[in-house]
Length: 292
Image (cartoon, rainbow, N blue to C red; front, side, top):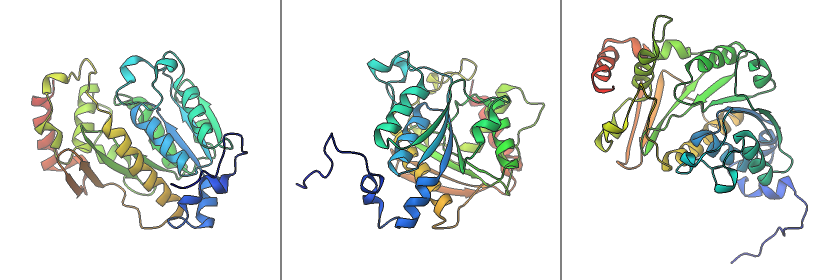
């Protein structure tokens, strides 16, 4: 067993704390991560785990947005959900978690979430944006993606799907968020949901083990399990690190990749017309019948 190199009373040293990253990151790479600022919208299941993983990668600054407080219903999947954090703001709890990993981390909190009023402040100084907003936050997403694109910022999102997830990277010079999903101003919330589900689900792996009676689109009831956010956190951290350090060429939409750990399935697809192709329109027709 190795001897601990840091005692509880010892002062924090960034280079020591993240030394084990070296080999996969150079000294110069690690300093780039230290100078980076990530805009993380949403601190629930996926967002909280992502903050945790990004902080342990040595990211030096975050803009964190979430309007909610922790509840018991969060316990099955959210990093910051404990009996002693019930009723506390997610932003405050997660800021404490990040500072417990790196006391030098610079954090700006947006306790009311993101809106047209604070979006420019939320994106100020940001290098990469991570979308971990709740599933139904369509208005906020439209504003976030449009403004990030105008500022030349990449936006990453990885929605959980049962015991897996999909990953989508939006290049500010590539396909727009609205164009990939086929959104338009005439859609009501149900149609927006159908297009979103179609766009994030290349293969319906989760239907092999999902109890469909647990889904209520109208009632905004969607099941989730704790395994997915932690897988997502690792994948998002790898993609953020790659965008900052450019280890390999990123693969933005219309390419999307999907992983299901329970079924041990991986899939990558490129939808050059997004969700507007005849095949994807057929998929949406099927979803309209199956999802109530």
